[in-house]
Length: 153
Image 1 (cartoon, one colour):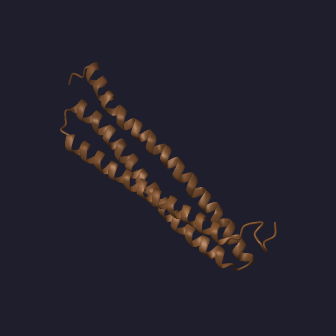
Image 2 (cartoon, rainbow, N blue to C red):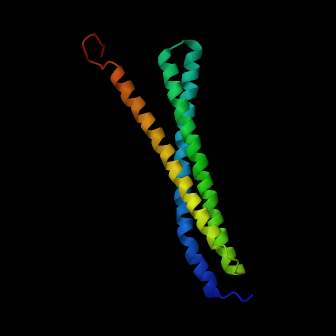
Image 3 (cartoon, rainbow, N blue to C red):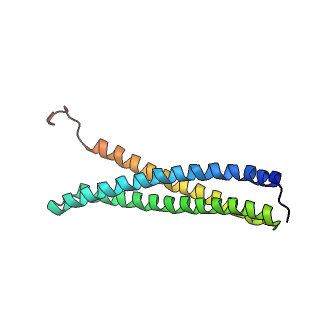
């Protein structure tokens, strides 16, 4: 097999776009992991408070945090699957060019499944954000404001 430098250059050019996509997925994973860490920290605080005093508000917030953590875990799983599939695309691009194997359909399928996983990850992420926003909005309206009649400043 006679592999030309120009052939390798062509494969590298084809692999650049998936590499940039992989960078974006990794950045998104970092954001998701940070959000999950914040949720876990808040759950620990609430569980410690529940050990000393029973409060229905704490239980409601724990339920919301549990739903959010489940959605974030799903988004992390889907983002990781997307990253794996994009890595597979990159590897198959090099394999197909260096071995002349007809991997076109596998490359296309892996890319499409990777995009489906990424879309699913964004959907779960958006649902988590909407739950967090709704909880904050509801919690803010349920609490009396400082300076209102009968509320100490």
